[in-house]
Image (tube, rainbow, N blue to C red):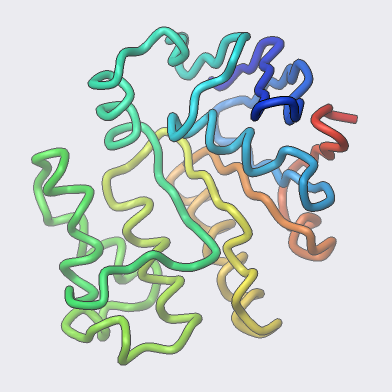
Length: 212
């Protein structure tokens, strides 16, 4: 489903990824661990089409996204990928419903899935509130709902519990696990917390730009 073949990425003189090879099957839940600066986020950004590698191939569902032009990459990000970030990245002037709806508007999709996703994520009673009226844990639930509402092939989570206490962290990881199991969404999750990494089905470690 996802395959990285000898993927390399430099920023100036800094060699961030040194030939990454990785294969992820459809429906997997993979935790990516490693110290700060090891290349975890860079790898996730390459898979998500936010950045491009200097060499190597990234295949999703058999298509090499490294050969995509800007328009193809934009469509890829909108249709195939869901993102969840540490900082939530919600638009404060939009309601919960309107934040969740953004991927559907971009993809010109029916909005009936919002209710189902909101019920799954347990925020159906928050749809008409604004992000500033919610707790951190509730805001991250909204971010998760926005990340999955368009039924992406892969969900990329970059330290999704980094701004949460241990109680809310456990809730968020349980929700991500439920999404993986209920919808069969492939999940790649970056974390530095061992307990969270242990919630995944498999785990890979990156050190100095290489998978151990």
